Structures are given as C-alpha cells and as structure tokens.
Image (tube, rainbow, N blue to C red; front, side, top):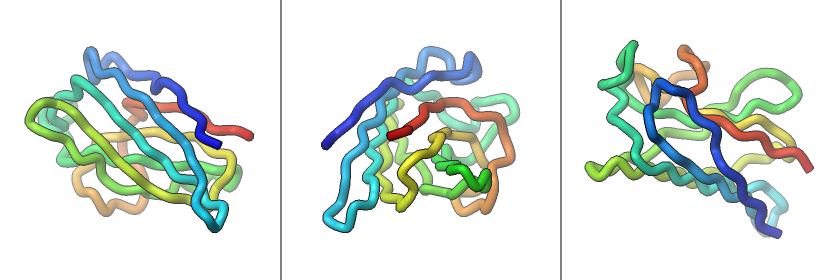
Length: 115
C-alpha cells in the first residue's frame, strides 16, 4: 500500500512545496520518498545551513537522521529513506553537516505518518 501527502512548510523556505510518499519493503519497513520543488539553497537561509536533513521522530521522542536531501541546481530536492518506524513525524531542518546526530534548527518542512 502506498500513501502520500503534502509537506507543510515554514515561511523561511519561501515558496517551497513538497510531497511525501510512503511504501513498504518486503521486510515490512517503511519506505519514504520525499520530493520538494522550489527549495532555496540552505546557505541562503537565516541562519544559514550546509545541508537539508530529514528526520523521523517516533513515540520515543528521539529523532532519527534519515539522511540529507539531494538538491539540484534547479532547486528540486529528493530523498529516499527506509525506517522501521510505523508511526512518526517527518521533518526537515537545515544543518551544518549531513551527519549530525540531532536537529539543531527549527523544522522547515514537515508531515506526519500514523497508521
């Protein structure tokens, strides 16, 4: 089963619009396909960042780094990630590095997945 939804966005990312799709692997993990259009470069934000990082926060409250979004020169960003979480809040922040262990900024894009 594939679910999809719109990402809500902060005014900080201007006219960015995004969509998230959820699927399942053979092992019953959740596949996340994230697409964002019109996303400005993270270094143009205030405060500036180096990378957009996606996070999943389940009921434990500790966010899991899903990885950096791949942003093209055309301001199109994508991410494909897999998580064992079933119900979670998904959000994107601008970070000083792609491999940070916890989010340092406010959510710029977000959605929720609850079965």
